[in-house]
Image (cartoon, rainbow, N blue to C red):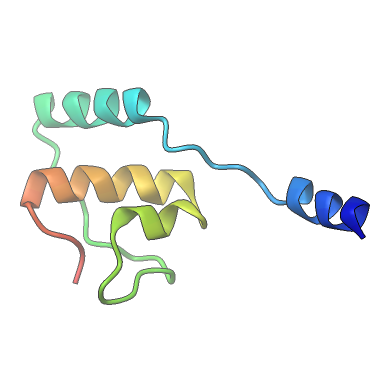
Length: 76
């Protein structure tokens, strides 16, 4: 049973937050004065934070962090 659980856990991708990479991305985009777009994916729900997107996509998580830093709020 433990082997099966280990296989299930290891088969799922691990998406770390990578705070240094996110901060560098946000800093670069703010320096370029790029306005972040509204969310257009399917995973966002009312009451979510960016961390909720991390389980689906690291890129969406990163973009959410930029959006939050730029606008001071989460997606609608």
